[in-house]
Image 1: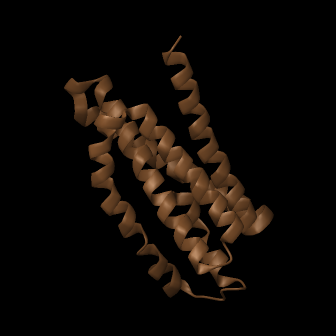
Image 2: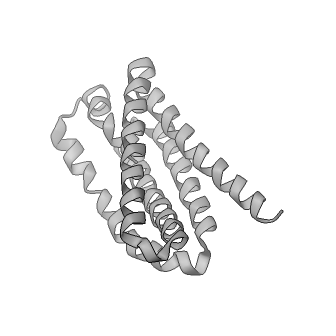
Length: 166
C-alpha cells in the first residue's frame, strides 16, 4: 500500500494533473474506505479463512495496480486504484495478523510486536523500491513494482495452499 503513496505526489505534479500536495491530501481521504472495510474484513476472516482472505487481498492489490497503470492518468482511475489497494491491504493485514497470532496465542503482545515491526520493514522496502521504480520509469515503474509485490503475495499464498493439501 505504501508503494502507491510514496510516489503519488510526484505523479500528480506532472501532466495531465499539474496538481499540488493539496490534491494528494484529498485523495488520501479515499483511505477512509479501507478503514471502514477493516472491521468487515475482520469478521470475514474466521468464516472465509486466513488463506482465502490472503488470496482475496492479493487479487485486489493486483487489480488496484493494474488499474493504476492503465487509468492512472485520471482521477477516477487513481481513486479506484487507491480504494482497491487499501481494501486489499486490509485483507492481507488482518489475515496475516490472525495467522501470526494463532501461532503463539500465549504471547500475543510479542507476536504482534514482531508482526508490526516486520510490516513496517516491508512497507519501507516497498517505498524504497517504488522510488527506484519512479526514477527508472516514472509512474509505470511504480506500478510495475506494485504489481510485482502483489503478485509475490499471490504466489506465496498459492504455494501455501498447494502445500497444505499434500
